[in-house]
Structures are given as structure tokens and as C-alpha cells.
Image (cartoon, rainbow, N blue to C red; front, side, top):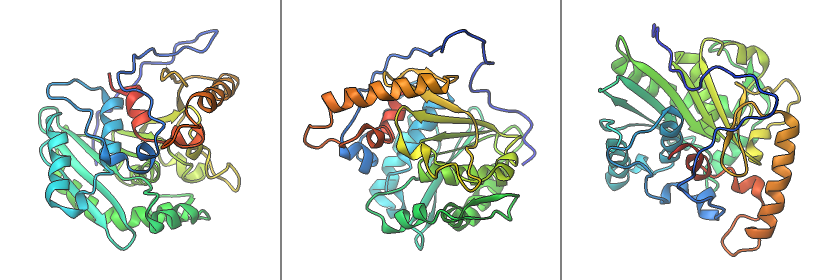
Length: 308
């Protein structure tokens, strides 16, 4: 794309003897409900007129808004555009592949020349999405290099032409391009980052996408990968056969604080405490997800940690 500037998301790593968390008062309560996980588009936008959001918070809500059924046009597309207008983005351009039931959208903000591509994650009611997730064999990613998850590759390729055409019309000198998504949308965003070399790739609840050779093609991209406490999807597919993650984990604790440099011992202890708390306070309530490992995957539980 020839974009020279890079979006800086976090300050340089500061050495510390203990795990350092970035305290953030969560204005949005933790949501263990099945609706939050299975129908994240039902909740109104958290954006407010005149609100100020950093890149993490902006992308977290964009990734959740990607679940709105804007492919239907009409009121749903209008609802997406109204949400984006609250943060000064002018409209939205949907990218849809009806054959694979995969979706994304692009939006641009003239005030700071920020362009965002956001991709929708897995919809539990979509058999096509589930089939994509289960197609876990590694296949050649001939678009750059390495091997990637066959289902994710198929989904990304189905959206590429429409997204590429929009980017050609939208990207201009000085533009900052960010690619984002949640779950399957995070995987598609990661594959797109190897194609369009964005300023930043920001993912939420991302599965592993490919092997080390593929991940090396992203060396020029600023990657921020958020992992919400027990989120099961971030441990899939398992690290066998060559699968590795793209980007270091920015861990979110059970209390909703960022601990981007948490070591494995801290993470395992925090997750164990989170599961115990969930069993005691949430799992038994009607309408809730039964286990925290799935509840933590809900998009709103990423948003709550990043939006003030």
C-alpha cells in the first residue's frame, strides 16, 4: 500500500519484577449471557457522540458491530452507519460472500485519514461458519507464504475481491489502515494483513491461523492480539502440526485489567480463579453460558475492558 506511518498502540515494554496490569475501570458489566455470546449484534453500540476512543477500544467495538446483519441492507445497515457516525466515520461499505456466509465492512474517517476493515466472526447458528471453523487442515497460502487454516483461507479469499476494490478507491497518501475482527473475523483479518500490509492488525479472541512461515509475512505489521482470560477459542487449533499465534498475547485478567506481559504462571493462576468465581456466581443462572471458557469469548467482554 505504500503507507509509511505506523499506528502505535502501546508504549514500549517496561521491565518489572512482577506482572504489571493496566488498570481500567470497566463501565460495562461482565456479561455471561448466551445472548452476548451467540447474538452480539443485539446490544446497542457503546459509542457515544463526542466520545474519545483509543485504537484498542475503537477496534473492539468495530469487531462487535461487524455482527450486525448489514448485508440485509435497510434498517440494519443504517444501524451500523449510525453507530459509526458517532465516532465520525462516514458510512460503511459491506463486503459479503453469500455462498460462504462470510462478511465484513470498510469505513473511513476523513478527520484523521483512518480507514478500518472489520470482519465478522463465527455465528453459532450458521452451519457454514461452523464448517469453516472445523476445516482445520493446513493449506498453502499462495498469496504470500506459509501454510494456513484451510477454512479461514477459503473465507478470506471469498471476500478479497470486494475488499481490494474498496481499498483501491479509498487508500490515499497519509491514510492509516487498520484491520480488525473477532473470532473467525480475527482469523480473516490476520490473513488480510498479509495481503494489504496495514498499519495495524488488532484482533480479539483470535484462533491460531497458520504456521511460523506465514506469521513471518506479518513482520512489517503492528499486531495487537487481545486474549480475554479463559477464552477457549484463543487456544484453538492446538499448537500441533505447525500452528502458531500471530503476535504476542495482550492478556485481559478476570477483573478486566490488561496484563499484556503476563507470564504463563500468572495466566494459569488467574484463569483458575476466574473459573472458580464463574462456577459460584454465574454458571447456574438461567440464560447464562455454562462455562467461563466460552463466556469470555463474547465480544462485549472484550469491549468492556477497552472502552472507558
